[in-house]
Length: 487
Image (cartoon, rainbow, N blue to C red; front, side, top):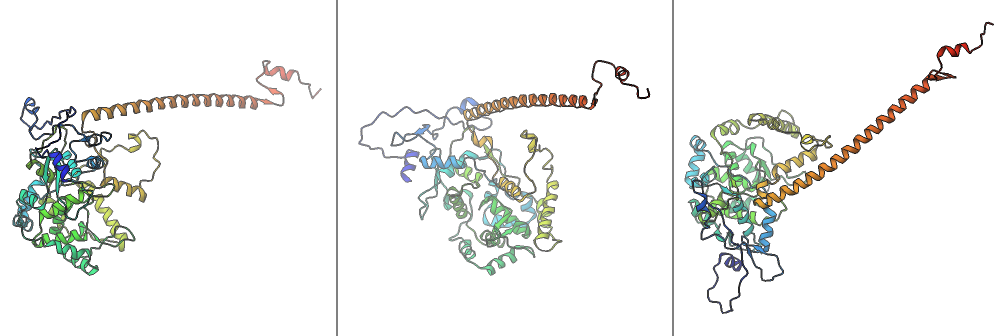
């Protein structure tokens, strides 16, 4: 991997005895990295650290060209895999919360995590860069899985160090010899039910229960709604900013131990766990997973003067946890289940979700268009109340479909996509038009057949035993031709 880093960053040996060969002409790639207030003419001059070529030539000419943003074809393929994955947005503590809840504000200052928390806040001047995140994680991928990782990535030709020391230096965190949570995590991982119950009794309100992943799995999770107020705030902070997970409503036992240490003021090496989470995220072997640490990665890249492209795409953290929300939602205590067992718990959870739908502002269905009308479908052929539909919608909320900006960051790709969509739309409309024409013709044919059947039925009803009123002669002629019975 070091040789690939050397090749990409351009730090090779100067003395080379091999005769020089004329390299193929390479296109210059200009990165538009200007900020607000700068003129467009000055932004067209690429900085010195910008990449000089659009592709790298592999040793074997038969192999495909490699984008110079990536260390190798393996890392480029890794980028193609994760480029549509959702990036989790960070969430910090609001200023009013830190002033109103001394346990959180004092702990943040004592740990020297104030700069890290500020990084988790929206900053218009220094937003998170989505493409930096994907390129960083793609080049941090290490298929060799060494025992001692290098914790180094490359973003647009610039070497970015994300080791614990580098992150702590960037954030100005308090540093000690060893993290106290490391041995605690190992103890929890091999601990029995008594260890988990000890954690639960410290962290949660009375009546909390451990939750399993499935009906047959071992229960090792807790719902954040059962946490005490301060523990719940630390839990959200930990899951959204340090150990990023796709579903932050539930928390694993080892992360529960971290929340306990945070609330008790025990030392946790922030740089260590951020570095570990970045490495694990870059080397995640699942088919789909959630990306994260957008603002942290952007800060690491910005500190190394990584070039910015105009189409990179900004990503801001979500609204920080405020004092009013903390008081309203966290301090009201646990939900009281009116029923017995899981039935009461499920009913209360549904009520809680229904209440939140209206308390959060705009009703979620206010501007929603029914899928049947949106897609042009005349009927709905699935049961929206079924378990499989609920699970599918839950999975879609955890892993939402990618946005157009992430799928087509370049204008040419977007124009090609629009052309394909237009061609598909025209073909579909042409088929629908022909289908409509055939349907109308069939409807007209059926109408004529029905009219003929009605006319035939009327003729049959009026033709009884030779009395056919449809004949040309008059009705009286019939009676005059009949013999008189009285005579």
